[in-house]
Length: 273
Ligand code: AMP
Ligand code: ZN
Ligand code: FE
Ligand code: FE
Image (tube, rainbow, N blue to C red; front, side, top):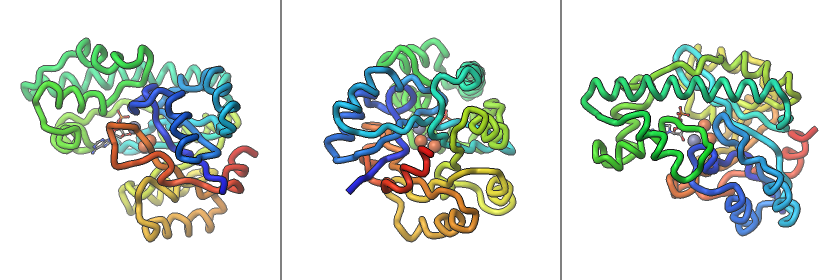
């Protein structure tokens, strides 16, 4: 049976697997379709990746997970069937990387006010050790805090300092979901609301659901089938594509195996049309 995991991360962002290793793993677990959706980068999509995918007979759907902010909350959008060579996309990603550097600086400064001494230099040295070019963000800061003994787990780092509303959370990624949907549409992609299960309910969610998405991520990670139902209903009502994927990150999230959520061939095909 055809299965495609449409939400995965590599060491081009905050995952741990090299893109080619991820592809090999996809083959091992019997996936026939895959989208690598690193945060704010398409570095994984090299000619070698496409060549190896063809060799392994795995269909690749070019994708990305774009960070946006609405009312100081982070909201993740997945974009599929993106034109990897679109100048508009490249400009957007270059700007996002710059915003991220500024935001990382802001977080480091807030941590310093709490006598947590990590430097930007240390952060990038730590994060870029395993890959020269990658998106650096809160997960790397959390891991560095563990390594330096300020917290005992990345989870604790998020809870105490980094999650929304915590003392060192910093905004500044600039683009709203609406602006980002417009960008995705301009480059011919499909805009999908990622893991809606975790969004703040009420007016915030209603505002998001009023935007012109093409799809919504209903099947996600290890979440119980029961929790998918409300989102499948929304997808049906709005005639949105019900997408899904594991949000695999490799060894930093060992509880989430590749392929634990997936979509069938008709859904995969809808996203490529
Ligand atoms: P950033 O892109 O820098 O805003 O970081 C967001 C990423 O951090 C998400 O994609 C998750 O992989 C990770 N993350 C968010 N919240 C938590 C948490 N509570 N514990 C561990 N990782 C988290
Ligand atoms: Zn991530
Ligand atoms: Fe996400
Ligand atoms: Fe993700």
